[in-house]
Image: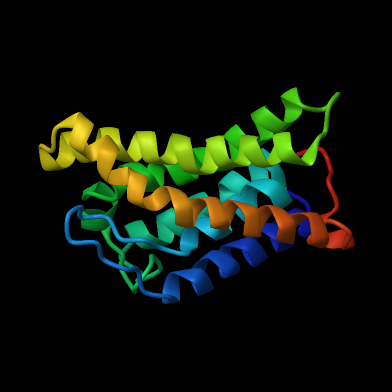
Length: 182
């Protein structure tokens, strides 16, 4: 790995760590809080691409797995990774790759609205689906209520996608985040 790659992965992991300091908002009817950290996951996918973006998210999850309090609200440890939020965290790990695959399909028609839709599908819909499936298995919650409970995340997560997409477009002008094959 090149020094630039290590630097960008470390920088994005630091962004994810900083966003993890902000506590989640508990909802009460679902054991999954509203968090800001998923905005960083979207940024990782948009700015770093599939390999480096996934590495930065993986590094965050590895730090959490060894017990460091790096997830939203100072949570960490294996119980968090296999608990009710585990599926969402797995979805985070897939988000950079899914964003890349979707945006690659749009190379010939790089319309911002379609790019934004791809980011939403990868970073919100896929994460919520994987999270719901995990929640069903882990918490013995029926699938339909698990899926319906995720509707509460859609408005805020949509705003996070717009924020991450706008930030990524602005930051890509900087040489550190200029698109390269990865």
